[in-house]
Image (cartoon, rainbow, N blue to C red; front, side, top):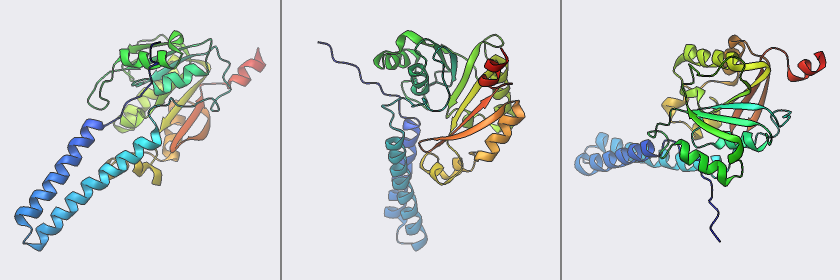
Length: 260
């Protein structure tokens, strides 16, 4: 009997984190050993070493809390019919794609990414599909290449437009708005945006370096951007340590159903 494959959704920032931590610890050790007779340099060496250790510990805690062996559980975020078509932006190895496919047994989820491997080692559509197959949803997902700010899909092609930890990586509000307006374009009337992001709040420090933390947005800032893009009926939920925003294009699904 063949061994069942265990899905894993990858360790984001792994190579960068290993390199940064190694540089800090090595630099701190060298400064302490070579220049430690001067109190200022001794303190600098200790600071660099301790910073490296703290950064590593924070990263390990974040990996544990994310649990990259499990797909996102989105079952309580929307009243899914089970037949919707969904688009997952910046899907990576499919953590959200698979989560959506689980609640859409008669639907189709398309995951798109630029498939770069600097931030996510091993990132590829083939590995993402292996995760989907291991989770038993390979028949209702597909993975493609695509640009989040200029999508190749026709207007009103999807019922759900989703993204997890990808919009924070878009530089500046204008780029974020451009992507959100693409969501408006490709969503059908009554379709839903599902945005999952680390927020600028205390738990955000578990997932971001101190510098990057101040580039994160607060809940109210995200709600303002989502509204500016043209969405309405914004509902905020928690998905673990992350914020989840669900918003509607035009009328809600319930309003659409009642008007027909």
